[in-house]
Every structure is written in C-alpha cells, then in structure tokens.
Image (cartoon, rainbow, N blue to C red; front, top):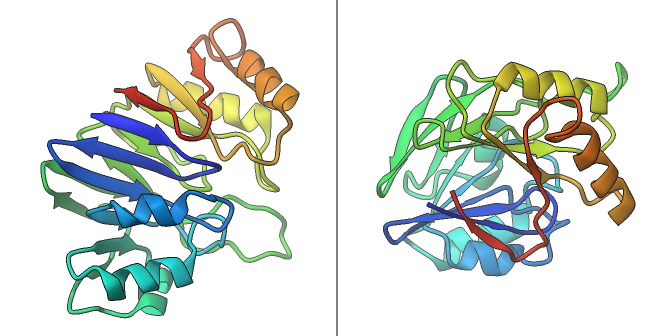
Amino acid sequence: MRLTKFAHACVALEKDGTRLVVDPGTFTPEAAEAVGRADAVLITHEHFDHFDDKLVAAALKDRPGLRVYAPALVADRLGDHDGRVRCVADGDTFTVGSFTVSAHGHRHALIHADIACPDNVGYLVDDGAVYHPGDAYFAPHARVRTLLLPTSGPWTKLGEAADYVRAVRPERIIQIHELMLSDLGRQSTATLLGENGLTGIPVTRLAPGTTVDL
C-alpha cells in the first residue's frame, strides 16, 4: 500500500490499482486533484476542513463510478446518487477493490461545551495497516500499524495526543491535521510525542505531495 499525504487532513491510499481518498476538505489545495483520481472518497465528519461538499458533489455528478462513504449527515447532504453514497457508522465494514475498511467511533472531540460535537467516524484500513481517526482521539479495539495523528486545531491537546498514542500503540505515527502549526510547532510536536518523547514511537512528518510505502 502507498500513502500520499496532502495538506491538512487529506490522504490518499493506493493498492492494486485502487485509490481511496480520505477527508478532502477546503484546507487542502490539492483536494480536486486527489478526488479526481479516486475510486472512493471516505469522509470522517462534516466540518469544512475535512469535507468540501461542493467538490465532492461535483465529482459524484461527473464521475459515475465514484463512491463515497460518510456519516449520516454528510451522506444526507450529498444524496443517494443511485446507491453510490453510503452512510457508515461505528462497527460498519465495507470493501473497495482489494481494500477492506472498518468504521470506528461516534463523535468529534470536544471543542467547547457551547459547540455541538458532530458525528465522526475513523477509518481502519486493511486490518490495521493504517488508521485515520478524523477529529477524535478514539482508539479502535484493533491492532494499528500506522496511526495518522491529528496535531493541531481547536480540539487538540498534546497531553491527550500522547495518551491516545499510548492507548493505540501503533508501530508508526504520521502527523496530520497540522496546518495550524508553524514549522517550528510541527517539529516541536513531533519531538515531544515521538521516539525520544512521550510515546517512544517514531513520528513521521510528510510535506504535502509526499508518498510513502506502508
């Protein structure tokens, strides 16, 4: 499997000629390009930095083979599109090509008591090869080899991120959702949470457009 990191929370996964794109939002300048090559788009939740509704709706209209998997509110906004938009929730599983995907978790992490928490599902791909949690520190009850770890945003906290990594116990961390940090902030976060920091697990920082083998 190959992973391509795009800006903020968006990643693409490729294997055996199939391409999944997770969370193409408005903070991702490359989102249109990523979705344009996708066989399926996976959305963790409704926030605009993870879900560009106009982009995904246009792609569904223009590309009859595209499928979308998302929580209920996102799926409702997009419409059924002859069954190509599927609502997913915690515990659901599905396949796209040779990929197997399971959904985990229920809610977005708390920002503030005055702000509602929307539904949020994380996606575990290929029996734990990679896990994208969306905007939540939900630990799936499964082995995770590569954890995509959110590190910036109004809901994140480094102490909670460290405890989350300890709960998941991945073999590898790739930093995502880091757009609100300066370069110094991204490096400091990786150092604090990484191999010689609070978790003892290597943290990989990828520039947008970088592809790695998992």
